[in-house]
Image (cartoon, rainbow, N blue to C red; front, top):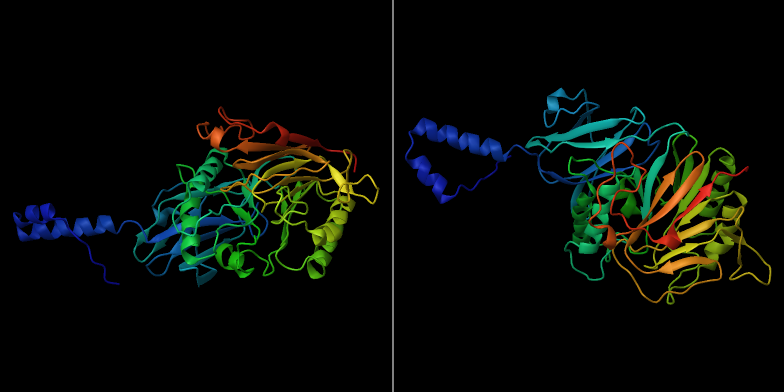
Length: 435
C-alpha cells in the first residue's frame, strides 16, 4: 500500500542543508514515526457469552491489512511481539460506513486483567485493557444501566450530554454497561460513527474499556444493527447472560418486534429453566410497560405477556428506557383487584421494581406518575447497581451534578467516590429473601 506524507516547508529547508545520506535517514525516521500506530479506531467491547471466560473485542479497520489482536495478562505496552496470544477477526462486516472487525476471545481466566493491541500492515494501535468478570456468586459486581444516548438534532457531530455520561462510566469503572437502546436519532452512518467516537470517552486514561450488553431501541431501524455493530449472539435481539457463576441472570428483550409468540415463549422457557438457580434476576428492554411521560403510549402487549412472568419467576429489577424521564417504582405485581392502578398493585415482599426511563443524553419534561411510582423527575442519569450475594443496591447517579467527582478507588470500586451526587428517590437496596 502506498502512503503519502506532507512535510512542512521548515523541515524541507533544514533537509536541503544536509548531505544526501542524512537527508534520507531523516525522511525515513519521519515516515516511520508517522506509521507507528495502525489505522484502527472506534473500539468497543461486548459481552456475547460467559463474561468470566470470554469477551468480544470490536473496532473499525480504517486502513491496513492482516489485522490481528495480540493479548495477554501482562502489560507489554505496544510491544506486540511480547504478548503470548494473537487472534485474527472472527467476523468482519462493512456496515454504517465502517469496516467492523470482531474478535471473539474465549478460554480467558475469570476476574483477570487482559491487555491488548491491534497490529496491522500499517502499525500498532495504542494499548488497551479489559477485565473479565468473577465466576463466583460470592463476589460483588458493579453494573451501570441506562439508555437513550441519541441527540435531538439530525447532525453527525459529537453530543455533549452523551460525552458527559460516557465520561462518568470511565469514573465509575463498572464491570459492564447494560445499554437499553436508542443509540442514535436517525440510525445513519454518520450518527453511528459519531456515537462510537463519543463512546471512546467511556475509556479510562490508561485504556480500560467497559463491555456493553446492548438492547434495541425504536431508533435502531432493524435487529441487524446490533448484530453488525456489536456482534450480539441473537439475530432477533433477545438473549440472556449469566453473571458471576450463579449470582445474576440478565435478560435482554426486544420491544420492537412481536411481544406475543416466539419471544414470550422463549422468555417463559428461560425463566423456568433458570428458576432458583440465580440469586438475582434482572431484565432490560427499551419501551416501558407504563411510560412516565404524558405523550408516550401504554404497552398492554408487554403487560399482558411479561408482567405475570416477571412476578411468577421473581424478577427483581426491570430497566426500561425510551421516555427520556427518570422513574423508580415500588415493588409491584399484576392484579385484577379494583384498587389496582393500570392492573398493578404495590407488593413490597415479592414484587418487581421498574426503573428508567432513559436520559443518557436527552431529557423530557412532561412527566406523569402512578399510584405505585416511588419517584419521578427529569435529568441526565444512569443506574449504578452493586450486585452482591446478600443484596442488590441500586443508585441513581445525577450526571450533571457529578461531573467533578473523583474516579472510584481501584481498591474499593463499590464505594461512592467523592463528589458523586445521587437522586434520593431512585436509591434503594433489595435484600435476599427466602425464595
